[in-house]
Length: 239
Image (tube, rainbow, N blue to C red; front, side, top):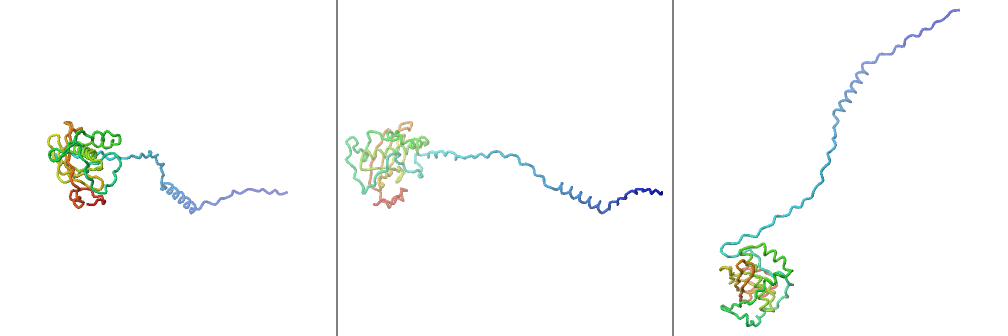
């Protein structure tokens, strides 16, 4: 009997082609290039909280006093710091009889026997006016104090008048002699009219209060002259 011997021949695997190797190498290089060229995103550090800051304007100091005693022309008129607005006046009121204690003196001036500005400034409703006065010095403070006194003295002298503003330098500049302010060309507003006014105002040596006052109220100022005297025109007055 013949025996047949089978011998397994080794399996020959085909050698890899160079095209495949080159293609694989190219893909690897391209992958590495993309990896290195990709942008790196770093995490942003936490931002500090935002603080809202309100900047306040600096305090404006009052203008310096003008040498020579004449107040600057740009100052506003002195207004009554308290009380409701007065009713309009239909016509120029005639001054009431002058009390014997306040009889006209030389030059027709009425000398006050009691100072009244301290009373109105002591009113709680005058806190803002008192605060403003504390920030003034020199001529401005004197002008304001004497203006308050003028308003109160005129109102007390004639109850039919309701003065609310006074311009001590409207027609003629004021002047000073020691502790006295002299206003020969002032103007006072009452109702719908401006009136001529003259007054002298004496202050304490420290300038804190009025200690003497005399005045003379003149005729109504025609409306056509208001602009020339820089008096506010409310568009309501008539000559």
